[in-house]
Length: 143
Image (tube, rainbow, N blue to C red; front, side, top):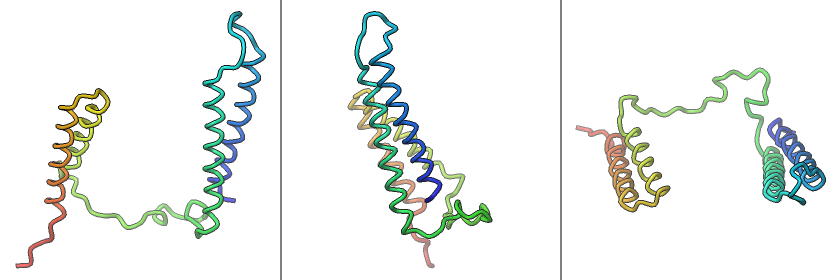
């Protein structure tokens, strides 16, 4: 079994145990003198977290049988064994920062539900994406 699936099974066991303790504590321990019964928001959150962790651990355990050994599981692996092919991206390009800023404007417009900000963010995103594509996407001229 892969260490990542073991880790997630451990997390799910912890979350399941904490859910049981939380259910017992909220039903039986009454320290506030006026509320009685289970506190449903915490119970639902812990049970759903347990379910998510157990599903993810099962998926990782299921898919790890089909993969080769990865550098994380090999004790004599070097850092360079994990690194794949690295692409080139110029550090002097302003367009990734412009795209991040336009996504921030778009996200704030969606969060505060300002239509003018949503439109401005969308236009800025299209513009900065086009500029980035024009900078790196065009092939070099052959003459």
